[in-house]
Image (cartoon, rainbow, N blue to C red; front, side, top):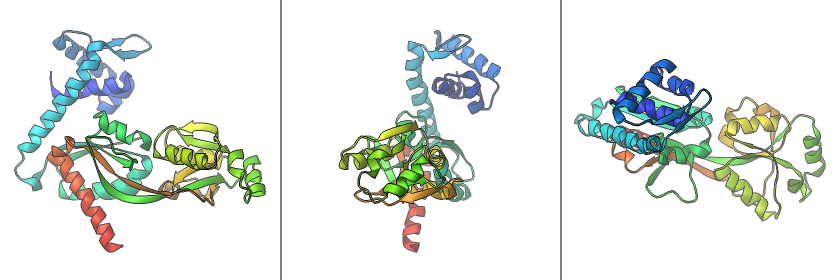
Length: 304
């Protein structure tokens, strides 16, 4: 087996879909199927159960995920240790973040890193920021941009990229929700009468739960949404109110269709940074990204 086959296997193990996995690997679905079949023949057991409708991992396939991740990580670490000249760094790194973070935090980091280390391949995946830490813990990405949790999981490192404030958003359009807010904005019972667009998980959900708990009510949830950008869109359509970081609002195409409601009794400050496994930071490429992020943040502090 070769390292490409292990990468193909992990892509399919994550997506459980030949079409999506082949797109991630930039190969055709038939090519991916052949590579997986060759891998299974070499291993000696089926790694996937597949039919016309679904793909799933076998017991052996689930165990092979750990082997494949460990093998690729050890290989990358070894390659990094073989590089004596830090200025001629080569290799690759994967980073996970939200779409908003790719504009507001990662663009500057990648620009600085790319200028310094042009031989490194940077792979960026975007998705729900609530999944950032779990993505790193599951070895799906080397690093991720995450809202700093109240307690960092054991084995992870964190370095600060910036800060944001949470805003309670409501629609500007004429609708029953806007009318209710306008008529009861000074009423202490307003919050418990509203419907909320809520993240599926993560720090923002915890903040909203604390906000409601302080006021001794259970929020009426219109929808649970994955991804902060989609939350702003639903608020703009009048489906409910939502708690969103100001950096998300500033980048949203719907920012003119929402307004900010006054809040009291809620700590609206959140911290955003990079997270990575301690073991991954032994890789010179990941360590260089980490150090570049720290340098950018320190420069920002000096200029503020």
